[in-house]
Image (tube, rainbow, N blue to C red):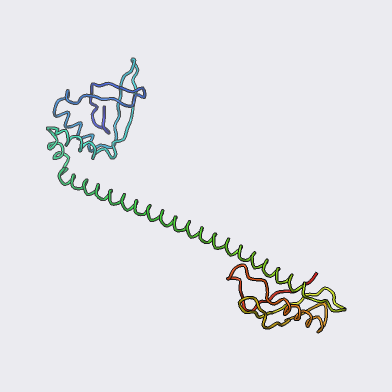
Length: 238
């Protein structure tokens, strides 16, 4: 076993997985100074090489020690390794301060996780609000579309009533008149004006006005929102 470019150390141990990448060895059989030296290398090193033997064949595995220092120090501290203080002193580590830094890092990690959770919650709430707003818009659009369809049917019923009351004058063809009628609640017509007319002359306009007045009261509105005191429609009899 060799850390970085240090002198290799012979260890006794065994593998316990078919991948040949996991196993253990005993450090307590080593000389205490060699133990301390090897552990110091592990704490401060950046990589290692292991050569082991299987069925007479020499195999090699390399690995990284980056990020291992906190775990090694934690294990040695919890196991109350007898040379722990000596190793940390040799490496110039103040483990009490190091532990505080680790605790601070943990607190920051927890705070970061909480902030991430809060952001995720806020994002989920914003997404939910956007979905609700989209659903509300879709519902309003659907209602407006349905109301528009009701209005088309309502104007169509007015047109039919006026057409039934209309008496076609002579010399008219392809009649199309824009009619503006003023009504009161209940559909009673109180004023009629033919804004424009094609397909005939003044007699045509007067016949349309008479037909609209005879149609009073107009058909009831299917929805109160459709009521308009000034009603304008195109009269185009078949």
